Length: 422
Image 1 (cartoon, rainbow, N blue to C red):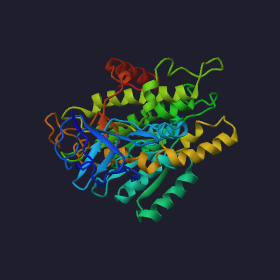
Image 2: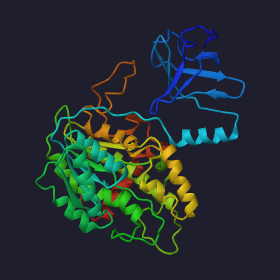
Image 3: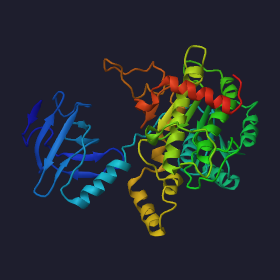
Image 4: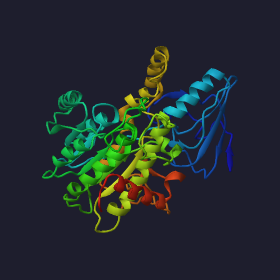
């Protein structure tokens, strides 16, 4: 470890902290006390060093994280720290910022036009933002939505914003098996390059059940209906002949709340005596979707003859969508109003939240653009299928998603529940 206490050193010269997403600048050159370098100190133009800055003044002490430090000599990336302030109010705000407003990497991957994406839950939030971003890349888009009126409005907005007229709307209710059957038949003669399983709900009405054996709409929408739709769409995806550049893709949008989930009584029908909690039900269904993605990859996305790539992703922080607003459904109106204001300040926008999804959909080699191999060299040859992504990069699967026997058991139970003979 090397300490650089010089106020005239390269880091101390005209320092500016720049937040990756929001470019919030705070000159600190006069406040710098010392710089601790935890790997190797070369010069201020070297990237990717693990550096911690402890910056102190008379009123506050800060430790900065996930920011770029810019000096006259170059740039340093600062990792794995947090922000602290002695003020209690400031500490609360900073904590909320760190919890909700995670850093965002913007996907600038280009894509050849003419590809076709099927997106569920695209009338608002991440689904709508994804449709807009793909339309800007001249993709054909099918919006699968329950609310046809809202979907038609989104279609008009996308066309007006992008000039892309290859946008179609199809009715899809993931809680109703006949609706899913009708939706999948639309694509019997239509090539599909990407199936984006984005639709998700968190309901505070436990009595609302689906046509899938009486399970709640949470489980039906977030898992069972999605699994059934994916099963029906795989033949359509496999008709798109993959090559070394682009394979057809299945993308499942999950949530970091899945790490709090469990599979106990997941597929049991709801009853008035059921011990039911909206947040737990959501977490359980998202855990199921992650395990489903892992087994889906093993069956269809791995090996030279299984040319369907499978990706699962977290948004890398809470996103200001209808789903986040539903969390406060049972709270008084003033609290809901306050949350609506704070959400705009603290949460990611849908555009920021959809970046991993866009990356997994369009990148010619999904992890290659951002990954390095064990020797530190850029690796453009690895396949990202079967990986979990957050902020456009692969991340480790949480512990409760690493049991492949549990994933296989859930798959068999799901296929049996849906009366699917493999």
